[in-house]
Image 1 (cartoon, rainbow, N blue to C red):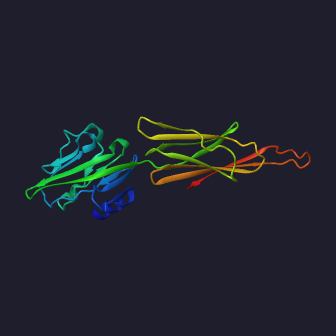
Image 2: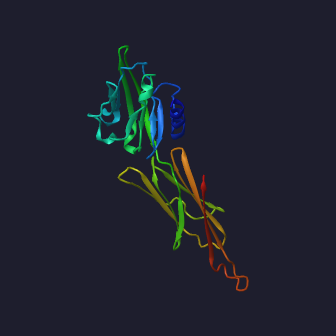
Image 3: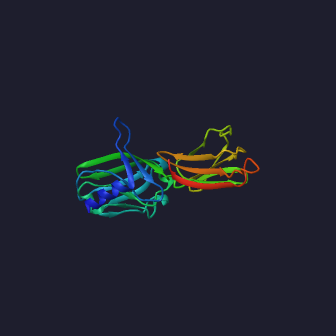
Amino acid sequence: MAEVFLFEFLVIQTFIWPCTGGDPKVTCVYSQSCILPCNVHTSSDSVILWNHITSEDSVVHSYYNGQDQLGHQNQQFKGRTSLFKDLISRGNASLKLTGVKVQDEGRYRCYSSTVKGFQKSFIELRVEAPVKEVDIKQVENRIICSSEGIYPKPQLTWSINPRSKIEIHTPTTVQQTQEQLYSISSSLLDSDSPDDLIYSCTVSSGRNSKRATFYRSYLHDSTTKQGKLEPLLSVCLYDA
């Protein structure tokens, strides 16, 4: 059981112990499960209380008399928390939080009390909804780039190859959903140049980024020597 717990902890989150002061930090992925670690005195009569200090010290999970006591649990966490009960007597009071939400971000306190005394520790939870994909397409004479379902607030950058006189400092629209996830979009006016162009759009958020590339190539008419006939378009999506 302990081996399964350790494997799950390593897979579903990033846990960072600070080198110089401050609370340890856990980065949890939006909508997935996450574990907030807490070590306590080894005891079979432990009282364990988890609080979300950021949201007015609300009760996240409580445990005593050998069972969960959730009568005062904050509604935000209802049905989403659990302890590893077979490990409590070995000093492990870690909290498992499922279906992680952006609202779960913030500072948590783990409080425990036994006949040996009481302990408390703090941990900072950060939520991350990585950039999953970037969509790039042409609509009339504009190249449009967009992505959605992202947290924290993303940034969008353009590049054009070969370098062009096209103004790439275009306005970017960022919107936030009720779930506090972000969507982002931007567009460029396509160049009238007959040269082949590669438009690249990168969306970044936290430690994560992805890039979509739009290839625009023109057929040339060698008989009439017109600059172009029909555009050939293709899209390639890959990690930045």
